[in-house]
Amino acid sequence: MSPWPPHAGGDRVLADPLVAPMATPAEPDGAAVARMNEPHVVHRGLHHEIRAVILRLIGFVAGGALSYGLNLGAFLLLHERLAADHDVAYAISLTLVTGVNFAWSYVVNFRTDATIRSCLPRYAATLLSCFVLNYALAQAGFAAWPDREKSVILGALVAAAGVKFVVYHLWVFPRRR
Image 1 (spheres, rainbow, N blue to C red):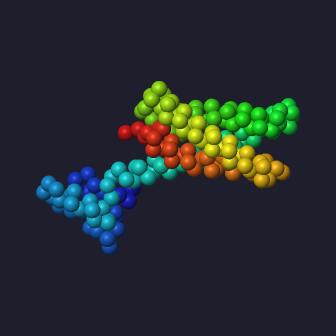
Image 2: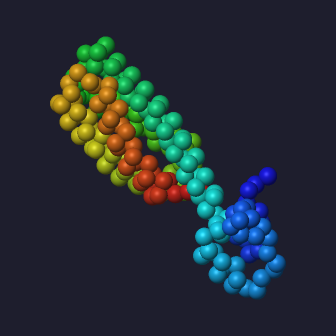
């Protein structure tokens, strides 16, 4: 059973008898709206919004873990096995991960009512910005810690991911209504 009992006017009152009564009689118009400013009243949509952000964050972290594995695997294959230049190997692996991440974000994690055509320009702008941020951070890290490639790649991914999550959630893939 939900801890959020129904309340007049479509709002829900926190189920804590010490804070607020569980039920109220029918009210005249405007009374429910006036009570929304009281600390014990939570608008029905807030719970759903918080849950949506948490679920998107969990999916984003899962996608990030997969990205790290794919990015590192492709980089090591290209650089160590195929003897590709360090910078070229990382650019190729990052490009591969970027393509996979768009599919993951649009189809799985940040499902939206927006069409792919409307999301694509925003995604491209965010993608380019985060790609440059990730690449710059990784190159600076490789210069500072040449023997810590795996940690540098992880650090660059995490830093760019923080920016990316906020921008994806708020702008690139607007939530379904």
